[in-house]
Amino acid sequence: MEIFHIFGYIPNMEHKKYIRGRGAQGNPPNKFLQHRHETRSDFLEFCEREGETARPVQTRYLPIFPKTVVNKVTSPDVGMQWSLNPYQGCEHGCIYCYARNTHEYWGYSAGLDFEQTILIKTNAPQLLDEKLRSSNWKAAPIVLSGNTDCYQPAEQQFRLTRQCLEVFLKYRHPVGIITKNAAVLNDLDLLKALAADGLVGVNVSVTSLSEETRRVLEPRTTTIQKRLETIRTLTANDIPVNAMLAPIIPGINSHEVLPLARAVAEHGALSFGLTVVRLNGAIGQIFTEWIRKTMPGRAEKVLQQIAACHGGSLNDSRFGVRNKGEGQLSKQIHAMAALAKRKYFRGRSFPKLDTGLHEPYKSGQLRMF
Image 1: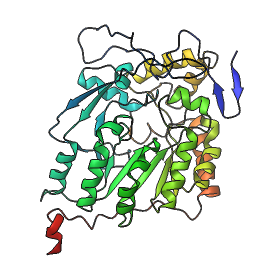
Image 2: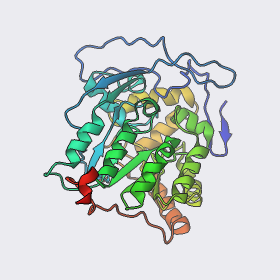
Image 3: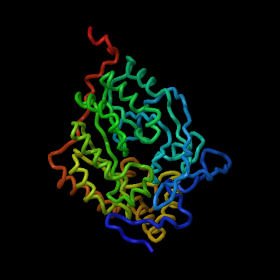
Image 4: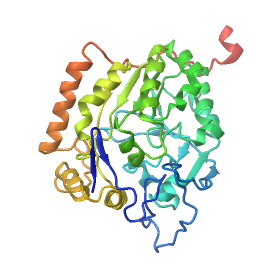
């Protein structure tokens, strides 16, 4: 029997051999491969929780050397023009993550492979440097990451995000950051220097106020309390913060829109945004398997409510509609968001980043002339 929690539902963690410490519960077939392939799952990690001992870390880091790292974002409803992802795949393991599908392009599954096989773009800082000093480049905010979290655990070892921030500072170029990891504070020195010239804004993702919900939705992410403390610390250092209350999942965290907005506002966020979950590509299968294991008594109702927000389907690819949803449930979610903005964010706004300071040719001692 499931127990209702004040901020969400405590999942049935023992149902059908739930894999602790991971979001996905298996590897669905890669749609780009002609034949199904068997993936070993005997090295799965488990969180140390409730007296259990975690197995040795088996996440693989594979270095790659792309030709470019600054990507044009063509989707008109994403809210960014350019993105840079130092890492491909994400150990955070968020079950709903739309970026899971990108792992299939590399020959991996959108399931456990996405969480366990992380591609490291080793030459990302060098490629960024080349881009920003190019005579053909016109300054526009570049977002770290837009796809996978630039402060996921791999950053502790490879420091690619920090190196990229050093490049942005070197050329006085605007940069945005999207993360749900408190490790962003490791680069507070660089963020303060960028913020002094209006060159950086940080988007902190906060999807629930319930640790029980967070553990199953986003099993390897920073705790909710640390995320709120991160917003407070960034704000105290004059670094503008927008909170991402996304995705909103009907039946799981949809009742938290107002308390979430209030919490991030009280910790200093200047604005917030949200999206209604959509389960595109392989995510539909991955999410469905996950929720039937973690919340078996609620699974079908949640799936039906998600579908009700997308015309009867778990996914919607229509620009302008896919992230907002439609139908009565979606209207209620956005009505609560509008109320939250009036109630908690009156007089606040997230600033535009400065694109007029970019110095593509003048670096180092040349700035003296």
